[in-house]
Image (cartoon, rainbow, N blue to C red):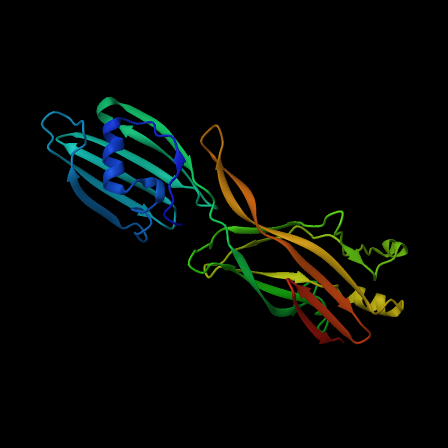
Length: 290
């Protein structure tokens, strides 16, 4: 998470705002919160706000944040028995919305609060071939005809781990999916043209990688198209890649949405008499099969 401010509304007292803004550099940018690991707490002491309980010369700020759960709090102690506490949760999976409440024990009050900042999305991704896959783990050995591609989100300076990527249909009227191997009569055999994405979702790992994205025909389809004399032939489809983000609804609850970070990824498969090729994002991997 970068240091960018929430565009948000605060429902609290002016003195609380002044202290929070001055002591924290504002919670809005996560600056004071994201630096602590696994539940470590921080403590700082600054001058009091413009308005304070009578006789309170200083305000003392305690703060706590657990990066694993996304939960934390900060507590302003004005001296004596007067204090206020803001408890919050940075919502997953997008980490771009925050929800919490101010507690005012001296006034027996609690006020809800929520905010949203722009979602951190990747600037792109790298693609590398990883392995040949079978359609099902229990399929016969030697039926691995589907190319598996592993991606790494960029930039590496931002940790996108724990979020989700989703493929969306990128075909257009001017650039539709194509499959020169398939014929209408093949539908009776349970074969469909490879002209649409399947709508997959993948978890992002801590190293910003995700996958494998599987691109290829199952072994039975490869054998069938060859037997029918359709080779050489190929298929192509366009994929848009999106990443999970958050928004806040009217009830101050986080809802998940997806924002496209890489449009127009070309996926494809080529079939020849003795070779098969899997293609993704301008890269290709070919093997002799069987």
